[in-house]
Length: 115
Length: 114
Image (tube, rainbow over all chains, first blue to last red; front, side, top):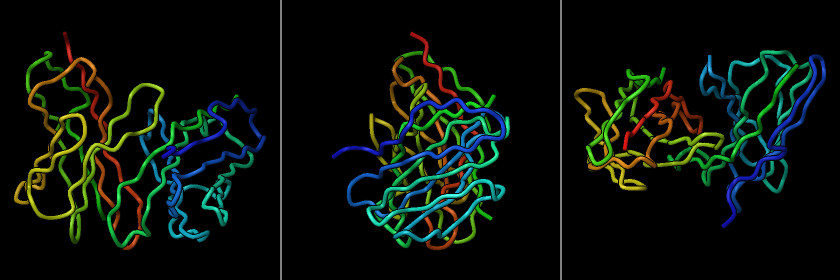
């Protein structure tokens, strides 16, 4: 079974631009979560989607948004990029909707650099 | 609010020696605890989880973790370390309610010397 895939793997953008990151979960998984990883803040939760509905959102400004499609693929968008948005963005997929504590499987991440 | 703490930024161990990476937790309700490992320039790999039942949980690559309710700890262990175990290890707890959201510790860098 193929793992979680994220595209692109690396991205360089300029302040003020916007960016869209894509995540394809493991086949059969309906839950997708996004995390931001930085050296200073560690791993922080961005949002979670299940069956195309956002179920949970972390403490990030409204510039960060996401969505999930009917095939469970997910995208996240960051508008008006700031230097502080430079990070590794990780997508994770899980089989269940949360009632059962299924483990999450992570993709390799998208390394975003904002200059 | 759920939280985990990893008190050690780095753990150094010689190859062949046992290793322990520490994690303590604070939760309301049942603790659902996880360990993940991250190799350089890679995503996180799932090692093991505790839901309920036996306090000793066995996972991937020879790792195991010991759940201790009285000490609110969930330490990761391996009887004999390998150089290839050198990586960043994260303890995590699932947030409350019907969600897959994980709250991560700050991570512990494990360095295994040959």
